[in-house]
Length: 100
Image (cartoon, rainbow, N blue to C red; front, side, top):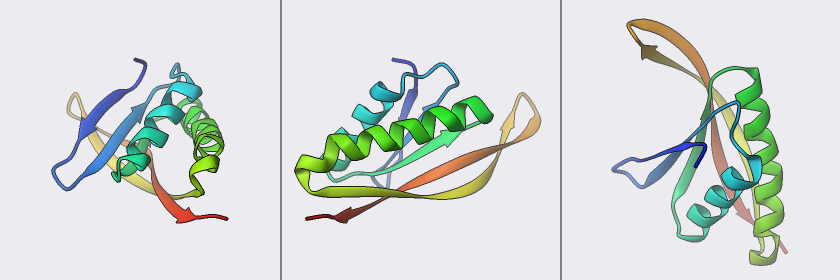
């Protein structure tokens, strides 16, 4: 799988999306976690990763249409320490609402 999965203790699934992640695969992970009642957030570092994340959100909306669930996202900046260096990333908090 292209993205790493990390389950947090409070029931939030964090999907780390890479520039080479397949948006349909990420979308499937988003949809499955939403169906299982988990909150989802995507973390992307770099413009190509953000692009793949946004595409995945669009595809996941289609996957959840028959479940009458619509998605939106709230973007946030986060700061990560990688190899002793502080880096900025984008976190997309996935928001759900019932649709009819």
